[in-house]
Image 1 (cartoon, rainbow, N blue to C red):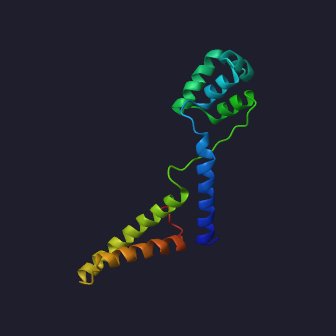
Image 2: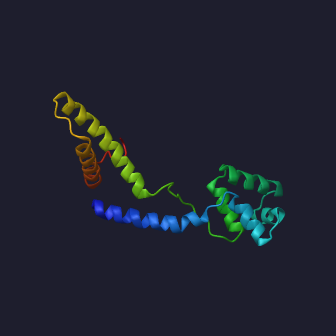
Image 3: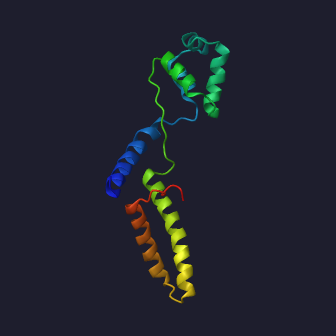
Amino acid sequence: MTYWDRKLIREQLDQKLKTQLAAFYTDQGWIKLIREALGMSTQQLAKRVGIDQSRISRLENAEIDGDLKLSSLKKIADALDMQFVYGFVPKNSLESMVREQARKIALKRMGRVNHTMRLEEQELTNDEKMKSFDDLVQKILIENPKDFWDQ
């Protein structure tokens, strides 16, 4: 797969994530939000899940705190007759994550080259450095070294 193939896939996935998954975020917790929207009491949900009523409140709080097992969420989703969906939403975009990593690698490489050139009194101007940096970032993106995420 070429750089351009991966870039297209990242951009398409970024668009899907941005338009679809971001709409599914809630800081109230899905269990309580859906349970209340359905007009279902904690006792009724507990009966459907097969656990004590007091545990439903603890699970709803644990969901908000981010301390809930995926298996528990799946059981509750089944009890609510809903499909459980699990996913990640990037803070920015996949493309910006890849570009930022390439910039980090380029900065590291440019630092070594600039030091050597300065010692040899061949240092580039700021415009030349910016152009070289942008070219190096693009080169790193296209070459996609195997240790890309190790650096």
